[in-house]
Amino acid sequence: MPAPRDAFTAHPRAVGETYSEHLLTASGFGLRMIGGGLACLLHGLLPFLFVATGSRTIASLHDVMVAHRRRKPVASITPAK
Picture 1 (cartoon, rainbow, N blue to C red):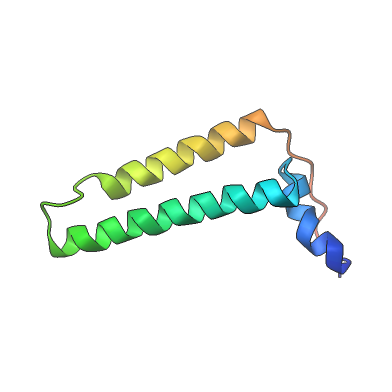
Picture 2 (picture 1 turned 30 degrees about the vertical axis):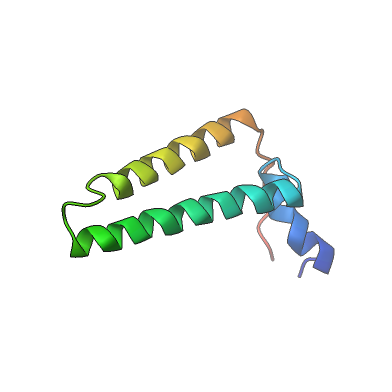
């Protein structure tokens, strides 16, 4: 079991971020996913609204994540025993 501090920093470090950077990045992604999800729900009720918002949000988040992954080196992660 990782030390309590390591539990908060292992994954951010593995993706080349500090804890604070990871918090901001993940929060931004989460908020955009919530917005896209709400747009999809409204589109389901009112099909003339937000026709492409959900798919555009997914494509945009994917592009940002892939670009981010290429920009920062990813450390190898040793599986937990």
